[in-house]
Length: 193
Image (spheres, rainbow, N blue to C red):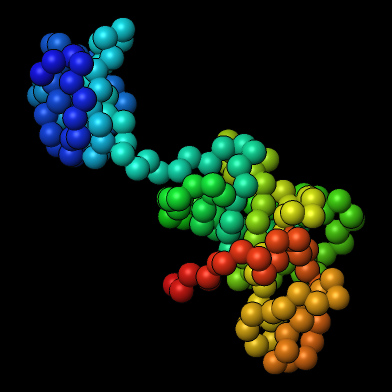
């Protein structure tokens, strides 16, 4: 194997010997041989004497400042738990079971007395990541953040944006929520579990 070689490798492919190279990112060592840990492009780093595999289609790593879309999974007195489905600008979803919290103080510029007036379980939310480590924390402060798709608290059907509130034509009721100015403009579907 030449040090300038770049080729597609698959999990388990032998990419080098431990006496020549260190096991770098995306590789592992087994019995003196270095193997690819995932599908990717094999690269040799002469400076660090590492064999590494860069993923072809890597999992999205959520970082502070990212804009995410997710589903409200639970609502408590002072926070909402949101299951993150995707990061804006990425063509790939995030790993399963990626959850974040949205504290009542990060819902709106205005004073928020109760979360039940802002989010319901099942609502799809656009939010900004304000902390990535050790746990994910979100904010929906600003007009561009909040619910982008909401469901009626009575019949669970899609709601329409009308008169600065959400309206359910089936139940003929209006509901207050923290609504994004992007409400209804983004094509999203709720995942069936």
